[in-house]
Length: 213
Ligand code: BG6
Ligand code: MG
Image (cartoon, rainbow, N blue to C red; front, side, top):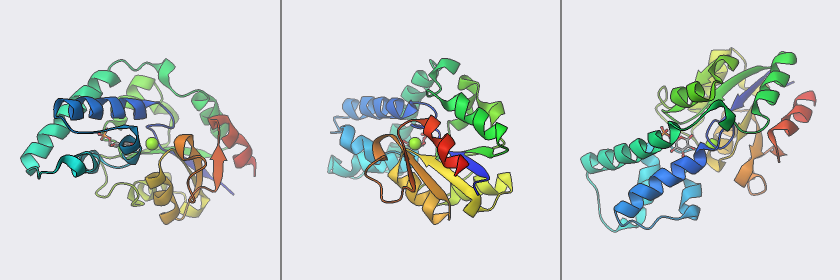
């Protein structure tokens, strides 16, 4: 049986994946770094500094850690400007409904996100009170595809990993969930490409059928 659902945040419950892309793109353009959507997809699920490393891969020079901190900080400033505009209407279609379904069926719900901006985003969307547990980038050492954030979420819920299902839009996240010993549901861009997906959701509502088994 499935006793808990652990939701990724960016790209699953809210389209902040697009904001991440825009903010990195703005910084990269200012620095004259080539950066496009295909590189953008590799940033899904991975931490802020690992994302920066991916962007800097093709720069042809090495950056000091002080320089890297400054670039990541600048990007985060741009990202926070975009987050300031988020309202409860920006929660992904079907997200409140699926959370209600889980509650109705006695299935616990948690967030498992690499983002250190998770608390701000949940606050702005007005979703925070709907989760029994939140595990995010502020609390972990290793980001996805490491299973740490999902194992932490399960631990906070006091549910064994084998009874958890993770909803993810990132390949790194699906792999992390598998390594945690959890079931996986892919949504968005990875829906057809990931070998780590147990279920494939075109819309969040389709999770209802998965939960019923
Ligand atoms: C993940 C996103 O949720 O959070 C990544 O998918 C992002 O794209 C990561 O890099 C870290 O986010 P933040 O908000 O801590 O910079
Ligand atoms: Mg995501």
